[in-house]
Length: 55
Image (cartoon, rainbow, N blue to C red):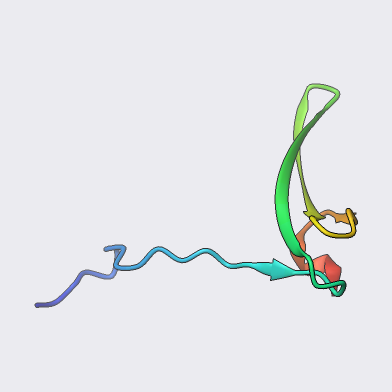
């Protein structure tokens, strides 16, 4: 049976890890009435704008 290109067959989430070994989680902060998302390491509490900035 053929599946259309728009059909979602799997649901995957990508996990990011900091150089210290901790997992990176995305958090939403409200600053001056605007929603701002940041990536924060659970282990060392380092925060960056996006997960790829941890490299």
